[in-house]
Amino acid sequence: MDPQFVAFVLLALVGLFAALMMVTRTNLVHAALYLVVTFLVVAAMYVVLHAEFLAAVQVLVYAGGIMVLFLFVILLVDLPREMAAPRKPRNVHVATALILSAVVVGLLGYEVVVTRAAPSAGGASLFAEGGNLETVALALFRYYLLPFEVVSLLLLVAMVGAILLARAKA
Amino acid sequence: MLTPTHVMLFSLVLFGIGIVGVLTRRNAILVLMSIELMFNAANLNFVAFSWAMPEIAGQVFAVFTICVAAGEVAIGLAILIALVRNRENIHIDEVNLLKW
Image (cartoon, rainbow over all chains, first blue to last red; front, top):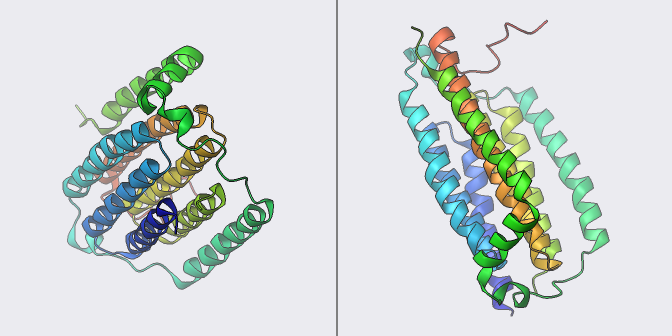
């Protein structure tokens, strides 16, 4: 067996389990912790797919930054007791969501399986020269400099907007 | 032998779980978390094709997606805090002021 394939299948099983648990938990903190597991599984998959820089970014930004933000808000939100009680999803909503999700996954999955994307042509060899970080940095700053600056502006706007929205009324 | 098809199928199922989460959960924080799950599924596809082509642009686009996701979460959680402050409620089916 190909070790890359075995690693991928094991990671996929853990990731699917964690994602399913995340969606079904009523306790928000438990859901957040299962989401961290999913993020770490995706980071490990990036390593399997030879995207080491993205794996580091995934751990720093998602498992680090975004999850801390989520946990902060979960702890900060102070609701009256009857509001804080978890509510079961309505049966009709669950049925509709399952059908819709099954249709999307089924149609796209059929297309994916039928099309049969070619196996990896170059594998690690393209990214090995100079390392993954250097390759990403060269492409980012040589060919995608303008999008990079636009994204930095977007993050600035998001930061200012978030502070403005969450600020206590004077 | 790992092919992009395997990665695409996994990310597709992850995306489907995210759809179910967004449509069934009534707590706004859990809806935001499910959206993050869907962002991750999309990113995984970018990386899978970047690995298979091979072409580094896919990883660069995944970096951009992560930036947009981070901004989206910051704004979403700020709106949520404003919502709790004004309405003392985070159940999205009960916040229906703009609903006809």
